[in-house]
Structure formats: C-alpha cells, structure tokens
Image 1 (tube, rainbow, N blue to C red):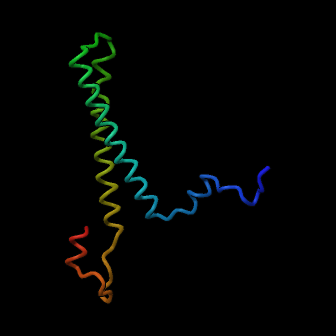
Image 2 (image 1 turned 90 degrees about the vertical axis):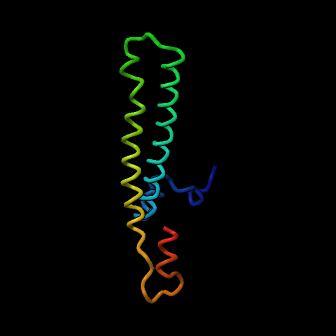
Image 3 (image 1 turned 60 degrees about the vertical axis):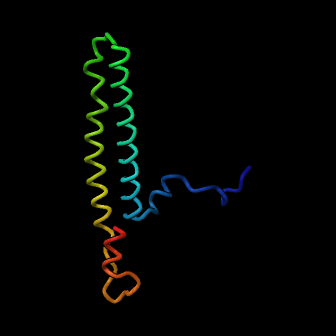
Length: 107
C-alpha cells in the first residue's frame, strides 16, 4: 500500500494553484489546438466530399460543420491571444534590462 503522504495531488488541486496568466496561456493553447484540429477535419471532410461523393441525406448538412468550427476557434484564439499579449506589460522605466525597442521586437 502507498503512503498517503506521498500521493500525487489531484488535477483539481493542481488547477487551484495556477495563476491567471497560466490559465490564460492554457486557454490559448486549447483554442489553437481546436483551430488546428477543426481545420484538419474540414480538409478531410472536403476531400471525402470530393473523392467519395457520399449520398447520405445528412452529409450536405454535416460536412461544413468543421469549417464553422474553424471560424469560431480562429476568433476565440485571436481574442484569447490578444488578451494574453495585453496581460504581459512592458518592463518599468527603471528596469534597464530591456529597452522599449527590444520589447516591441520580442512581442
């Protein structure tokens, strides 16, 4: 039997310790993955529509769904990414490590 003091924390405990910045970047990653996967599904559905020409009655209503998801996930990703970039404020004026020019280049 394992020692109860050595049990790994649950996912719920890990999520409670995350900062707002980490949660935002995690949401950006999820939206980006959704965008990529829905784009891949849209291309696969378009290829299936052209090559296989499915005759199912539901097919004309189903194959454009991934393309709608592409639009929604691209919008979500763009909004979340803009919010993430806005959350990163430039360094203060007394901090000489990065000048404003380098900060804009990095962004």
